[in-house]
Length: 84
Picture 1 (cartoon, rainbow, N blue to C red):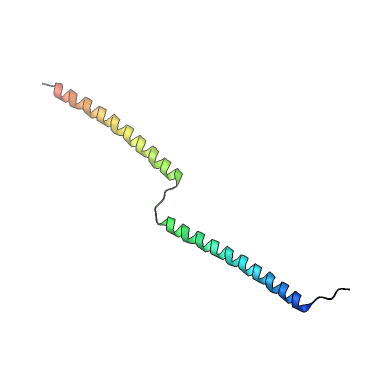
Picture 2 (picture 1 turned 135 degrees about the vertical axis):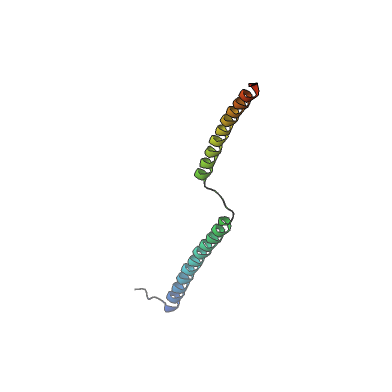
């Protein structure tokens, strides 16, 4: 029958606790760094891709409407200039 040495048992418990504590500290440090990075990037006013695409489509539609209105205005001005 083997008898367990209390010194080795206590040492094993202490090392096990230290390893758990170190792992917990690593997780906390990683989470804190991730949170700081999110806060830093949050102030840079990035836009989501779907929002960018929506504004891009709106700008293209506005450009087309502007060109159509310009053509209409040019036609009206030409019509007015042709009248005696």
